Each structure stands twice: as C-alpha cells, then as structure tokens.
Length: 292
Ligand SMILES: [Zn+2]
Image (cartoon, rainbow, N blue to C red; front, side):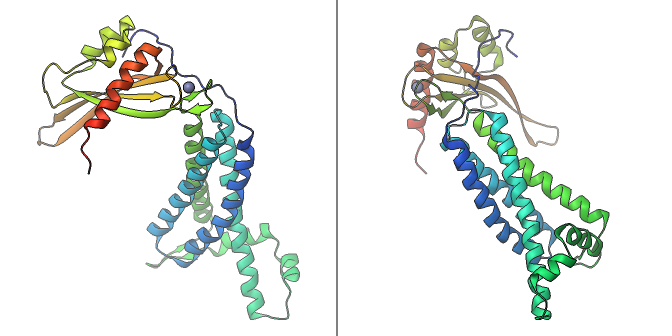
C-alpha cells in the first residue's frame, strides 16, 4: 500500500431538489412491482426460482433507486441508503398486503354473501400474517415450511431486498461528482501489463501521479498488470480522480489459474495536469479496443 496520504474524493453530502420526488416515484413503482413479485412467489413452488425472484425484486428496486440518486444528483450516501431502505421496505410490506387482499378475494369467491369488510374485521392484516406463519406452505418436493421457518425466510427475504436496494443506492451516491459543473463523473479505464505496485509505489510516494499515469510496461509480462480507472467530469478539465488496481495471475500446484488483486489507490484527487495525462491515456486505450 502507498504510505503517502493523497487527498481523495469526498462527497459533498448535498442532494438535488428532485431526489425526493424521484424516490416518491420509486415508491409507487415498488408497490406496483410487489404485485408481480407476489404472483411469482405464490405461483412457483420451486425454491430456487423464489430466491431468484427475491434477488430480482431487490435488484430492480436497487436499480430504480440508483436512477433516482443519479437523476436527483444525490451525493449523500446516507440519505440515499435510508430512502432506498424505506422504499424497499414499503415494497415488501406491499407484497404481504397484496397477498392479504388476494386471500380476501379468494374467500369472497367461495362465500359470495360475505363482504370484504366482514373478513377484514374478523381477520385483520396482523392476524392474517400470524395465520400464514402457522399454516406455512408446502414444498414441491414434499415437506412443509411453517412457524419459525416462515419467520426466518421472511427475515432473509427482507435482508436481501432491503440490503440490495440500500447498498446499490448508497454506492451510486458515493460516486465522484463535479460540484462546479453539477455533473457526475464518467469513468474510463486502461490496463498496463508488465508493471506492479513495486513500480507504482515510488511514484505514489512522491505524489507524481503524472508519471504514474504515463507508466509503461518494462516487458510484456502477461502475469502482472496495473489497471487505472479514471473518473472525470464530462464538462471540465479540472475534476478527476484515479483508482488503481494491481493484478497478479498465478497458477497453483494443480495448474489452475488464480488471480490476486490489490487496490493501490481509491478515487485519489488529480490535478488538472495529472488528469490530462490520465485522460489521454484512457481515451487512447478506448480507441485501441477493437470492435466486437
Ligand atoms: Zn466539471
């Protein structure tokens, strides 16, 4: 690791006025999405597919929350995480509530003289959840999920959905942003083979990030490389950050390929000059990539 403490990107913690409105939209989406999610969970008795549906529900809410963060210019990871958590929690609550509604319509189908109000009086939502826990559900391959196991699965489901959405939103808000242009940074990467942290560290210690960005491979050693991720403002030439990874490819005793990676720098602030060098190199690397 580099010993020198180079300044790195710090989010301003600000959020655009649109952030809350966009999250309100995501909340509506979560309630609608919960209908589809619950249908899949009820129709398909295969646990693996239920699990995938849970991942998709959490991932979908996370993607929607990321969109809200991005468009809402939310540079506050805590606010983004909490909003995503709330929206995902609402989605989960809605999925249980839709289930409750569909159970009520099932009862009415069988007993047309009973009204929904009668059922709700006899079986409030909370009591319905208790009943579901008691009754559980049957598995396709036999066996039954009930009681504590139901509670456990509900908690697991909540952790996956809320956790995914929260982490994705917070991660999006922590990405570099140019405060003077009010724009998110773009990122481009380039990889130089035949160099390691031993070559990079002296430059990092001197703070010579221009030389670091311009580093070239001593040989064509295909087992070691440095990957430079350049995050830069799309509008100006002053805001840019560098993340540097080292990779070593080794083969173990059984001849299996193994990769070891280390992060040498994390969103370190670049001066305009350093940024120009890193950016040139990244654009050149992009141009070098063959289509397809
Ligand atoms: Zn800018």
